[in-house]
Image (cartoon, rainbow over all chains, first blue to last red; front, side, top):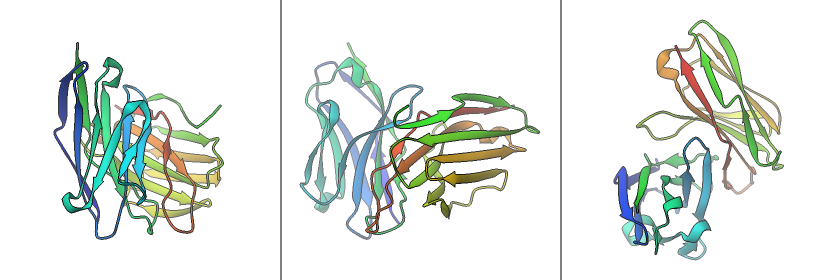
Length: 114
Length: 115
């Protein structure tokens, strides 16, 4: 079975500082990995995805994530935080060959301090 | 309309009511999903429809009844719900690929409150 662990349910950074949101996964097969963002009162928006091509994946809004098989990690980073980045972020894993099931982490709420 | 839309955005109902949530996708996808998002819990997959056939029912109580009349529309019929069913219900859609999973696109959700 696949699972995702997001370390830290709340992360707070200053505007202009580095954003690092951590995600570790467990999967018996090479996975597909996703980061989604959810702004208040909205649905989930895809930030980026890893599908076994390049291990460094660039997404929207200046975010990127690196797939590290040896560490079973897929951490999300952004060099310089902006106030508009305040939201909840979800990491998810799926089996590329299986049914269309996304397994989500519990989410990390990102707060940006002025 | 573009993307995935959901109506209503907010719904308050009593435990004896019957109501329905509607989802419509304008992306040409052929798979649709219902998720439940409760406070302090990870998103839970409830149902998956692929080519209008239900392919996944994730041990959801029978008071939730999905319907997929065509590849663009998905409903969730609700009856005799409990207060613990209060949550944000999210619809998503994707392409169903022979080789497996494609990216899921989400609607804005319906905020359900059961009194």
